[in-house]
Image 1 (cartoon, rainbow, N blue to C red):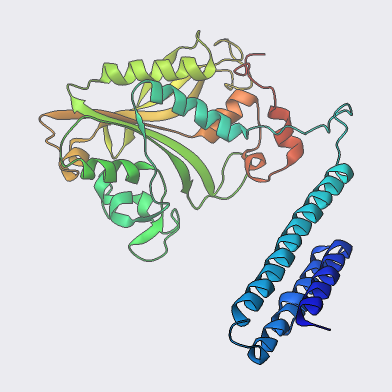
Image 2 (image 1 turned 180 degrees about the horizontal axis):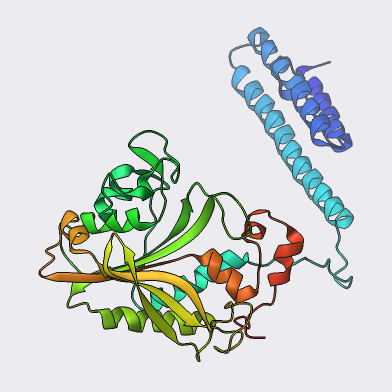
Length: 352
């Protein structure tokens, strides 16, 4: 049998094998059989050394044509097999669009998240900036920068979670205010809202928790007065508890504000007439506030003769408990789906 006949026979057999291949593996085996290092077509080149020099170019060209033909057929077959596989897959995975869809269970925002976002939205609309801070804080920023000296009872080891003598879990979000004022290098205005978790060594019961959330606000600028604070707090009370709410300010004491006030809002349930929510007083205490103490301004680098400011702090846990009639603060942190699912459609501001 001549080399040309052998070449033709290899080519024909290769085409048959290619057409009989039913998957990628069989096709690869055919490729190795004919075009691999020990394949039939590769073996044809070994006979070139026995040919006269003038026949070698033509012979080499013929072998290359056979190789190219086989490679082309393999590529075509591979594409055909891929299309057939895709069609089969589409047929098997066909979806009947007329079938009713699966019902997706809708979740609900946690009542604390709902309350915090409502407060944040209000203050963002007033031009405040939301600022986050460290939950593990330095003693200086948690106490000293806020006018709480070493001898202050709030610094007692029994009331705070100390990690070292100078590091503790923050007991309020006020350190965020101190750090922010320090970064401003004595230049106002400062308008910030600081939400976050805080930690105190309280015994867990229906109204106390060792971890809870707090939101504090701070405004520092020239000519900030007590009337600015009162107007801001009135707007907050109306936003949270309804347009017909009123507030009253009672004198109080906080080391970082002077003067300091406790803020009460008229009871949203009994409209001030007296009920179990307000303990028959007609008023509910919701937050503490005051004008920023000059010492705090000076320690943060502000000129207290030029700048003044107000600060306020509230517990979203307490506000959410009042707003939604929740009696136990521990419900917020137990992740009971039965409890959380009750807040899917509560948008009535607690008035119904």
